[in-house]
Length: 261
Ligand SMILES: NC(=O)c1ccc[n+]([C@@H]2O[C@H](COP(=O)([O-])OP(=O)(O)OC[C@H]3O[C@@H](n4cnc5c(N)ncnc54)[C@H](OP(=O)(O)O)[C@@H]3O)[C@@H](O)[C@H]2O)c1
Image (cartoon, rainbow, N blue to C red; front, side):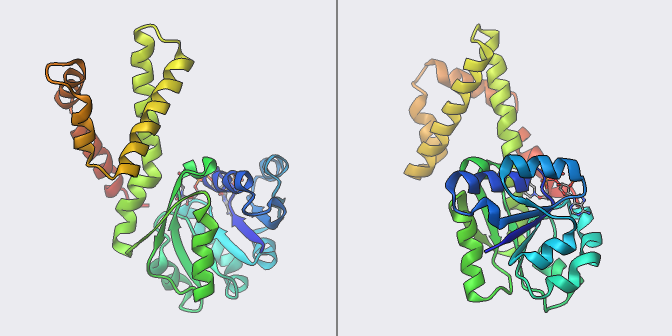
């Protein structure tokens, strides 16, 4: 099954790297088009996919198409490929280009599903939010889940929750990276070599996240279990509260939710 990416930037590359690692999708079965030919060719040599000369050529050759360019580029791409796209199932990962917007633009004939991925797919730990509203056939619907199940957690969400879901799972890795960097700096301040500081903090976050996910325990319960009365951790916890950790997290999500792509 040939899968064609329109756009081969950070997100598409993370998906391809994830597939390459799991060997779930053979690299020769992945096609991609992007306007910068030199960059596309270099990426193709590195990742093994087949570079194509135009979006139209790509759509004609692919069995499935993934719209992976920037949201503001989708409209002009569609002008070129809409006719050829009609017979193919389409996945849109372009922010805001959901089922309603696609069908409004292309009409009800286009089979498609809106999916919000995340870059940790590269290491098999992505989150893939699948919009519950779609018009794929039953068989295609199953494929749309299976394609991503090997490189992350697949969750189906109603259309009105795709925005907040995508904010947490898609933008969240950048927020988590800032936390790794900030605690890493704090470790360096007290003498840890930088490399060791990042390795330690990343593993700590990974462990804390896995413990919460796998036990299903409330994060507050897990936090309390680390805080002995009058001990060291509770001092750090109260300092984080005093410096507005929760308010900062809420403000970050509010800022994303107010943005219109
Ligand atoms: N990054 C994330 O974490 C993330 C998460 C969820 C969803 N998304 C969505 O994924 C999409 C891509 O994001 P990204 O971060 O990968 O962006 P990116 O790194 O900027 O990649 C954009 C890609 O689109 C290509 N492109 C530009 N104009 C094009 C055209 N006219 N036709 C075909 N391709 C064209 C670019 O090619 P050139 O480099 O050759 O110009 C590049 O390969 C966005 O719509 C975004 O909303 C991203």
